[in-house]
Length: 255
Image (tube, rainbow, N blue to C red; front, side, top):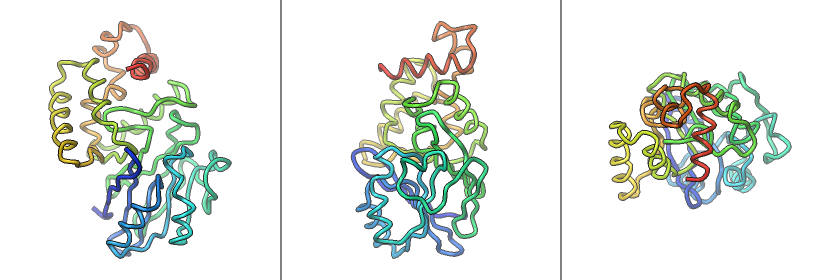
């Protein structure tokens, strides 16, 4: 892998990610739930922070940005569509734009749904996708702003990535997400095995993210909404994929 990846627990259940180019030492951060644990990690590793990549405007993903910029002078990148409600940006981005961390090139993907203007950062050479609250470990973000069709389109983009891609999502919600998944596919052995591994990890205080896309495709119901047996389980045999996704998301909202 061309990038070092450090997962940093923040707040009650958030994650931030440090990514460092091995060749140049340039370092970037994805999301800033709070500044203190990030600064502590940078200090412990004697790393400078060059860039901050923001995925969306929600407070628990950006509230530490001002403090971190004051401490490090890092440049701040975020969505042009969200510029009016993000911390001050030095670089405004749209889908198709590129970002760099040293010699590594990242692609900006519009993954609106959880919010409008939510973006993800994909680094193909390192097989890393920073998806925050779009595609999550075992689930997906609640639809605060986008429609089910919008979110289904966003998830479909991410589902089409190489299966070995690591999905770096924004929260420790995996246990509850998989409990919901088991109500949809109670006989999915891959899902049951994953639930056991997640329970062991959480008992040991180990993060359950990043996750591998191949495992999401095998166990995450929101990526599996197009499958006939999922539609049948929902009583929606003739539904479109987006309609099946909408029904899943509605069930999860009251789970």
